[in-house]
Length: 253
Image 1: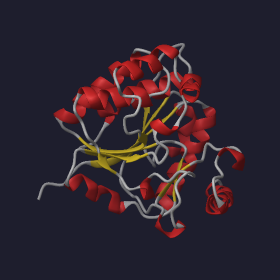
Image 2 (image 1 turned 120 degrees about the horizontal axis):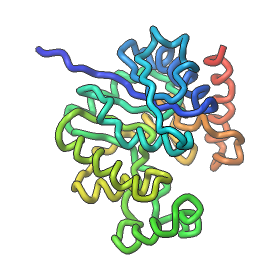
Image 3 (image 1 turned 135 degrees about the vertical axis):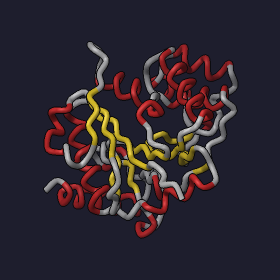
Image 4 (image 1 turned 180 degrees about the vertical axis):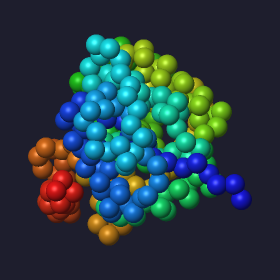
């Protein structure tokens, strides 16, 4: 049987997020028990000089662009830097259990993402106007996509093929229209390409709004949080927040 090229991709832009990326990679190797290839896209390769043996470091940049812009510019083009089977992990994710089981999702689909528990329909127009240009919010309303399922693109599992390439090209094209957060552009790209992602279990993209037994969680998506007030919804979340604070120190040693 022909072996499949399988690997993990990170994007990391700016010194602050580079710190989180290093922590995420350490957790991936130690707790995720992952020994395969890692491809890292960054505008500051010097920050990862000691990681040359850990991953393939690819220097990418858009001259004069902010770290925020660059991170979305390249994230919406992950297919350019993919493997035959690719797992993209956001820099602010911590892997706390072996991840080998995630690859089995690709036995039955081209692409898989978790659905946000808090859906667009539950959020106010004022909330979106804070994150997105008014013109983009209006576009989502006029196209009837404001109540579309909101997939979380912090963890994306996908295979290399023409259908996935088409989705990423549309995602990048839609994102370039406004150049802010990438979530609305993803929804439009999914609609334009008639793509329905397989639903990735939230154990692989846990956020504080989810209520899951800690023993089931594989990937925690929350390292960017700076205070418990940003994320605490119930007592179990408070426990997890304190837990993450402790293991962050362990992985940063």
